[in-house]
Image (tube, rainbow, N blue to C red; front, side, top):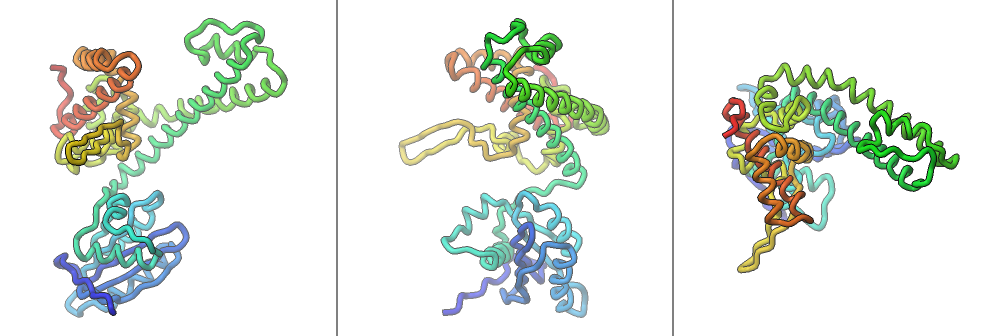
Length: 361
């Protein structure tokens, strides 16, 4: 039995294109408004290949003018090149949210041809769960700032490994200095002089050399980050919020791009992933930790800024203390830090939405 064709419900579009995109090859399906397959097939993932494949839609257009073409592709790790190529070739590109697609069209059997056809059908019906595509400026800033985040995380990993080496040799001479920061001047001087077994000394020297190189690269990025923050008025507004400086303000602006895509502060906080999981069925209701399905970089920024904000702002400090007192010494501090991070996110939303500096009330 032949599967019934899906007819387009989206107005003013002549052809619908579904692209199942992969790093080396992609599968493309082109359908008209009546659900007839105009062309389908696999291509090499290059601009020339996709341009050659899409020419069929233009060639079959009416003589009165060019047909209106709409394309859809899934948002993945390396979506940006294909998204840019399609944007230059068709009238509109819809970026599909992977998690939403999984909920709508998950099946036992799947391949590139089926996935491409499903994307096309969902596009024709106007049922594609959309993901946001950042502007070129925001994308470039994201790459710069995310690179800096990566360098800092590598630095933290190296510091942790150095701590392990030091802790494994408590009797090493000279004695470890009583310092709060092992990577300050006194601590680093001790790390360079401490007498350790040969393999451990070699490891420590390697890690110290890597740490020094990372410090230089992170320091070099500071001037660029200050320049980015200075050029954007939104960064200046965000820096009026406790705990938010040049780096965090630039990161928030780059990751958010257009604050108007969030209808309310609740939507913004949910997007970041600063709301708890909830499982409710009948009379049973189970809560949990943060769902952590949103933007990981924004979540990290607000959580990192929370302790500094609580120390410098009375109302945020009061929120932190109240939650710590209610939740106890064990769980309280982490829960309180997340609560302050959520409050900071709500404040940031208002500042960006209203275009005004933060006022401590």
